Image (cartoon, rainbow, N blue to C red; front, side, top):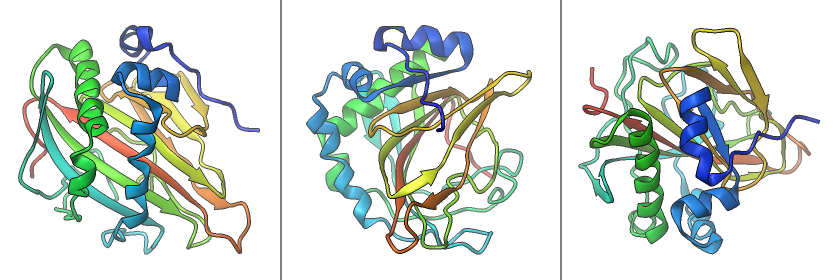
Length: 244
C-alpha cells in the first residue's frame, strides 16, 4: 500500500510550505483556504472530459490530454491574458524544453466559475506569503493522463523543477488506476518523501526553488476498462512568464 500524503492544517499551510518546501492540503483544508463549499470545486471537474490530445509528446505516447491558459494574479484580482504558448528552458524540462508548445485554452465557462477565481487568488496569496506580495504570472494546465497506452506518465520529463516560484498540483479525479506515486525531494539535500494523492481536491504546494518533484507512471486496474488521473497544475512566477 502506497503511503498517504502528510496533510497540513489550512491555518498552517504558509508556515509549513516555508519551512519544508512543500505542503499538502486535503479537500477540507483546500475549501477552507478558498472559502468555498465543496460542491463549487466539484462543479469544475466536468471540464476534464473535454481535453484535446497533447500533440507534443516526444516519447511517442498518446496518454496525455490537456488545456492551457495564462493569467496575472495581483491581490484579489485575476486577469486572463491573451492566449500564448507554453515554453520552458531545457534546464527545467530536458524532454520538452526549448520549444513553443501551443495547447487549446481552458474552457471559458470554467474560468467564469467563482471557484476558479478564488482558487487562483488563494494560491497567489500562498506565493506572496512565500516570496513577498507582487503580481504573479500564472500558467494553468488541465491534464488528463490515461492508460490508453497501457501506462500513462504524469511526468514524462522525470524528476524536475519548473523554473517558477510556486507550483500547485491539485488532484481532480483518479479513476480505475493504480500506482502514480508522487515524490518530492530537496533540490540541494538528501531528504525526500513519497505518497499517493487519492482524494479529489487534494492540493500539493511546492516551493519550486527548493524541491524537485515527479509522479510515477499509472497503470490500469483492469486492462479492459479505461482509467485516468486528472490534475490541475498552477505555476506562479514573479517578473513575467518564461520566454525563449
